[in-house]
Length: 111
Image (cartoon, rainbow, N blue to C red):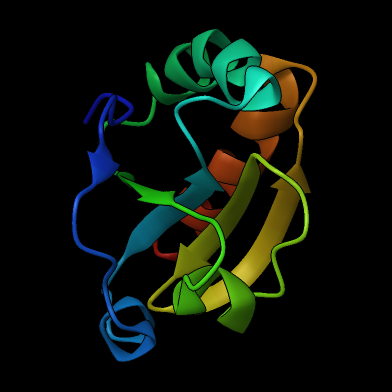
């Protein structure tokens, strides 16, 4: 499954994220954030070899509870989950290899 290019229009509830099955990455950021835009090619490249990992992009900001429930302070923040449990996190990733190493971690846990 390629990296998701669009932000979710409706913020999911934390319970829905906690109930996810299998490997998933929740990305918090905004469309106008320069750091978020710069990270998109890295994220897309990293996801190219991880078709089985779900990618959920969440528009974050004031009044958004999901990001606060994950203690997100900077964008982009990538939260790597396996069966709804956080196993790793990257804040403002600098390379695709960084992201790939975390993707391998969550994908391998279920193998």
